[in-house]
Length: 166
Image (spheres, rainbow, N blue to C red):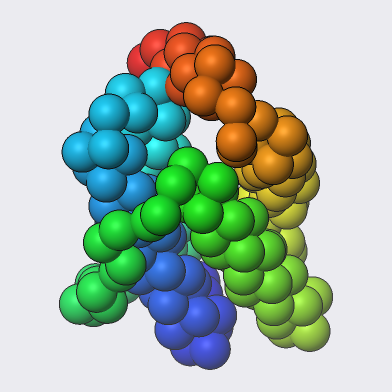
């Protein structure tokens, strides 16, 4: 059974993961509107992943006899100047997600919530991957941002990544 504080914080994380999904959907449609179909597909896939993260948290809350409490999702940014701008926000956002996951791990450790510790390990590993991916894409974008052919190639490359594992 979940302790009250853990249940509250896990529900906050559910809401944040849904907000993350919403943010990436916004990025996807902004990139699509700008003609970057590959970047749009990448962000759309990212939105689905974030929704999956929220679902994973909700499932855990239910398995631990807790109650999922969905809250309104905050408004998110609607436009970015470029794919590089969107990925700068992506990296910054993923770092914020990591901080929130680490805070949950600390709470699970403090309260000796062993099931939560075990479940959160997956998210710790996932955040390493999420930050690494965002950082690598951003570094490439910095190199090609003023080269239309390079930007076009990256758009095509990220579109292929988005098609995998659907």
